[in-house]
Image (cartoon, rainbow, N blue to C red; front, side, top):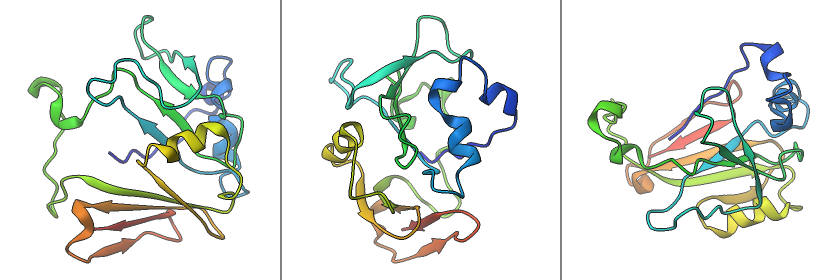
Length: 173
């Protein structure tokens, strides 16, 4: 799933509750060296409560008090993506019908099969980001500017859309 975030309430983003996420700093410095991406993992079926990286519990106001999002302890490393895991998350196609979102896309995309982060800071990784790379769910390579490359369905159609420079995103299918 690809989710685009936008700061719509600066006061909320700078609030005591949200400040430890460093989302405000990532937002305000996104064109000045901060990584503009976040990577969210969800548990693999049967893995229990295993978190891929060392983390701290973030309890945003929209979640029940008993639930949290696990945020990577590297959240203050602004040159790396914001890492988090939703222990309660699951594949979108596994949600009950009444909770599901539309999964049929106009151009027939079904599944993300490649996530590759291009980063000017790829040569020096925190233990948390290295742990995510070690899961082999994302690839990381060096480059002059941040960019996220997504591959869908094994990229067998040989098609691509490059959203740069407006959005640092390339999609291949």
